[in-house]
Every structure is written in structure tokens, then in C-alpha cells.
Image 1 (cartoon, helix red, strand yellow):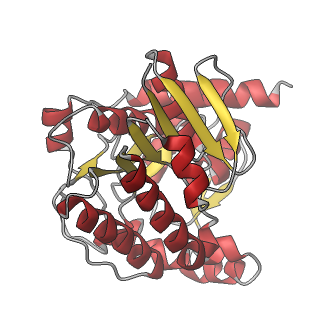
Image 2 (tube, rainbow, N blue to C red):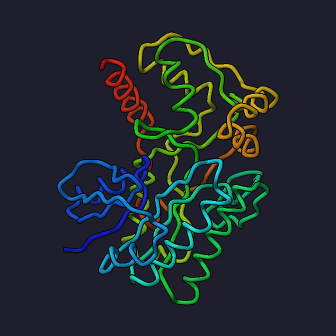
Image 3 (cartoon, one colour):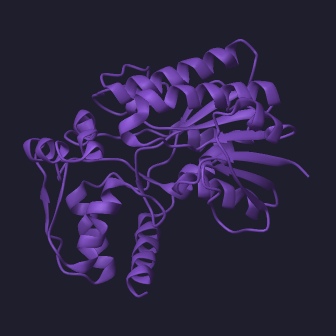
Length: 310
């Protein structure tokens, strides 16, 4: 039986592992702690993904290596380069195809629709990290050493993700209390459902035309934060949302007290102006579509109510 290796058990990594296992494929899910979903088709393995020899041995015979890892947000410049280099080396040595979970940081500020062949033009530290990761992987692909693709999404929605929106807005809206969010609340913004990201990664891994380029996850919505929160409240029969803008000055002040919050500052260009992802090629070539927003929000509400009812 064929198998895949998934590194990282955040929301997307768990979804990739679960969807692969549900389709009958055997999965080795590698994390530092050995965490992940319980499933007869998933073998959860604790280990250091930068240990190249160990991970290469574990990946021998794998069809695909999925990079769903996510170092701490404040440690990208130090933690991502060795991890990305290790995973690329493992893919080359094991012969596995390599599918990377990416994001939109490498594009930098973009006016208008963000297309799937948008060139890298990072203006931030984290954007430069992601751009270099893709450049290194693409160079290996073009040299014929490995088949590589990257799937990119925007800010995540869904029950199983630790996005800023899920952390700051969802619990407050469902509880009927006030909250603040670091963004212009009334500009259009593409939102990505975590399971759609997983499905797009799997679709890319299974398509011969996917390699050597990036793909965008179809967005579930482009609603501004204020309108999205109103939709969430209406579905939950919650009071009208009390969401206010957390200004740049306020965010900077909070950042002096928390290193993760401080990292949000350089990425504010993504949420202070319209940011819209085009996924025309992903939909046409890979055959992926976005999950309806109502289904995503309903899942989120149900999961929150389950947790609060414990």
C-alpha cells in the first residue's frame, strides 16, 4: 500500500492526514510531540523533522511528502531555514514528491487581484523567509532533483485552526461580548477554509500538471471582517457583533508585551487594504472548489459550542 508523510499537525496538517487516510492511503504524521488525529490509517510519530537521515529513512517509499509545519511566528527567520532545507533534502533523497503549504507573504503588497503567477516581491522579514523557501524548492525542481509544488491560502477560517480571527473574534461574537481586531474592518479580504487548503494540497499531489508552480486555495469568502462577523452572529443567533478596530498604535503597544503579537505589525498591509486571491487555475486544473461559507461558519459554531459545553 502506498503511503504519504505529513510533517506538522496544525489545522491543515491534521486535515491532510485525515483526508488521505479517509481515502484509503496510509499516512505517517510527524510532529515534535507525536500528536494528531486518531485514525486507523494514521501513524503518529514523534521526532525532529530537521533530522535528515532519520526522516529520510522514515520516508523511504513514500509517494508524497507534505510540508505542513509551522514554526513559532516569532522565530521564522531562525527556525524556518533549517527546517525547510531539511524537508527539501528529505524529498530529494527519498524520491517523494514534495507539496508545501504556503501563504501569501512572499507577494508583498499587491494592488488588485492576486493571481497565481504573481511574482515574489516581499517587503517583510516573514515574506522574505517564505520567498526564499519557494525559490530554493523551485530551483531543486528545475534542476530535476525533485517534483515540487506549493499551495497558498489567505487567513484561515474553520473549527480546527488557530487563526487570529478564530482567537480574537469568534469566541467574543458567540458570547455576545466586545472585542477588537487588528485590521480595517470594512475592506474586502479573502478567507481560506482549512479543509479546502488540505484538499487543494492533495489534489496538487495527485495531478501531473501541478509541479513547478504555485496554486491558490479557492476562497470561501471575500467579506470584510465586520460583515463576516455579522454572518457568524446571525447563524449562531447571537447578538449583533461588537467588533472594533485595533489600531496600529494599539497593536504596537500590545506587541511590546508579547512577541507573537509584535509579529503581526509588519503584515498589517494585508488587512488594511483589499486583499483578494484569484484561484482560477486551481479550480480549472485541479478541480477544487471552495466550501460554502455557511457550512464553514456552522462547523465553527458547533465546535465552539461543544468546547464551551464541557
